[in-house]
Length: 290
Image (cartoon, rainbow, N blue to C red; front, side, top):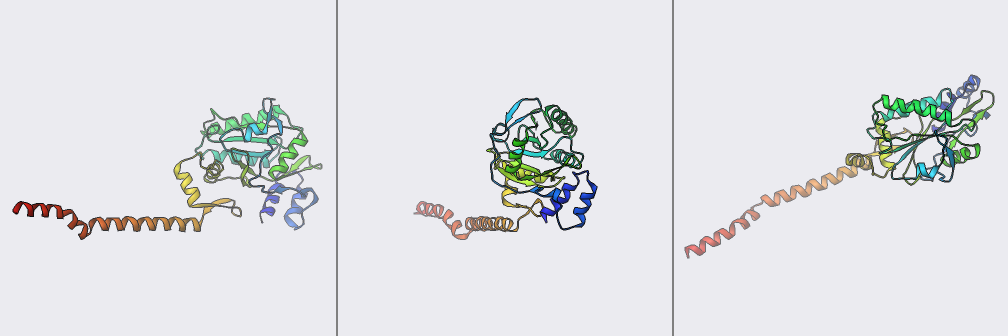
């Protein structure tokens, strides 16, 4: 089910309308979509030795971006001339960050890598400028943000895509890339924590994913409490959902605490405890009368 949905989303990224129609009406995946999709390499490291060019034309190593500090990272693979799907993905990400209530550069980092080796730093800079302006327009504090828009050669791009399970293909007929829509959450030490495969990302889910990737280092105590005691990631729903086992376990803890507190209150108010509190005074009175 997930694979079929991802392949359907990939159709949006192609100009070849006939191929897309074939995909919608047939069960057989056309050759141009062979290998397109997401393989979730959870808990696997992002190769830190890969070198890309950032939007300023400076060579940067992936380890400095996705495993260089204490912050989780949202990683996306797109390309900057993409006619539709990449724009939908990045716009969806920006929309979600509006209400995440976490500050980029302070609570998390953002990294976008082009899968097109023909794109360079100038195009990356143009795209970065546009998306940073969108974030600012939505009221997100970007004063500390360093959203990196990267470009690289074919070998480096392929190694990164293989490592994170991002399958794509170049379509010679349309001159575009067939790919899926996904954002990936990376732990501070550079491991893949979560995939969200869609073009819309609920802010609550993005916040929870960042808190989970950071292992509770960011967000509030309430975020950590709710995430680790009430919710569970559901790959089929592509969202965090209430987890029955966690809720029953939490309810059991509250019941035990309630019993203990109730027993303590009853013990404090019991007649034996009242008599014990009065006995020293009675004994003292008897001594006085004597």
